[in-house]
Amino acid sequence: MENDNVIDLLPEPRRLPAGRGWQWYVSGFKLFRRQSGMWIVLALQFLVVALLAYVLSVVGAIAYALAAPVLFAGFYQAAKQADLGNKLGPLDLFAAFRGEIKPLLFIGFVDLFAAVLVTILLSFFGSQGSFPDVPADTLPSPEQMKAIYLHVSLSLILMAPVKCATWFAPALVLLKGHSAIEAMKLSFSGVCSNWQAFLLSGMLAAALFILSAFTLMLALVVVLPVMMLTQYMAYREIFDAAPVGVDGA
Image 1 (cartoon, rainbow, N blue to C red):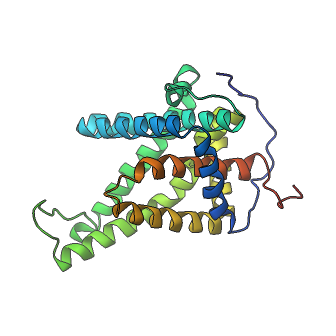
Image 2: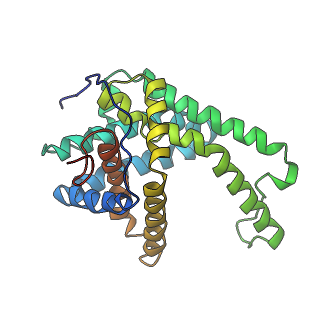
């Protein structure tokens, strides 16, 4: 499969209206419909790799955290190829492993290091910041629910800047040829510049997960690949082709 590793003089990330968060889903679903079966296969592969990694406990979790950007880069590349009208293959998720993966592994290392650092920082809060140990066969008490809410909230707040920096970084490394540092700077700028569209996109994602629960999560077979393609559409509009009606397109 052709690899477009051409270094561009990339301008500032495009600022989009909040409503594009909905259009990313519309465009992502249209791209999904073209080769729905293969997109389901690729998304399930991603999910299986993640589950197998975490079954292996700490070693597997570390390995997955480092390799995740390589897998995401493969998915972005597959999405671009499909967007160009090319046929997908079952191994396209792992296509990025055939190239230079050091910048992608560095992105994974930054994400992992940040997660470890946040865990250490939360430990300074003592029992208030730590995640409570709730037995599997019991419901959490009000005090435990409060601790869970506090832990998750603090984790999200502290990890938000890093997630903004790594969100589009794999695509910018593989598809645009940027270094890991440049890619993370551009990703951070792109996400922050379009926080309203991402807020709407996140609310839609939460709604889709809730609706999937009514299908015993079977709908996730479609929801997961569409959500992943939504991120490609966001990348394309912010860093690549302008959507109709934006920037004079």
